[in-house]
Image 1 (cartoon, rainbow, N blue to C red):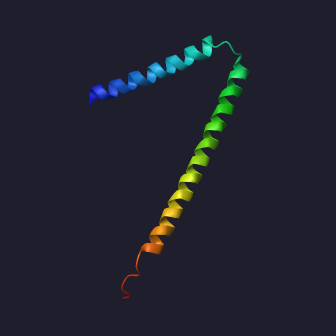
Image 2 (cartoon, rainbow, N blue to C red):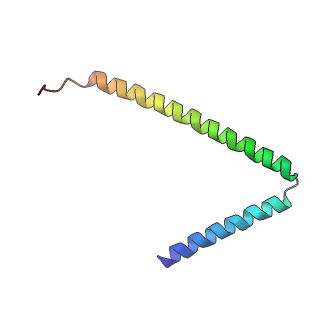
Length: 76
């Protein structure tokens, strides 16, 4: 268990160090980089919303098909 915790800790610290180095050595200005990250983040969120809406529509169609195929149950 301790090995997993140490691994996760090392992974997180490494990720933070890597992100910091990327920000330090990027050829873009800070404002440009922040705008690019913000734009990409909004793009990812929109793609996720679209995928969720498509999946929901697909599930609703499948549910409608199952409801039409299911014979009525016995009344109580």
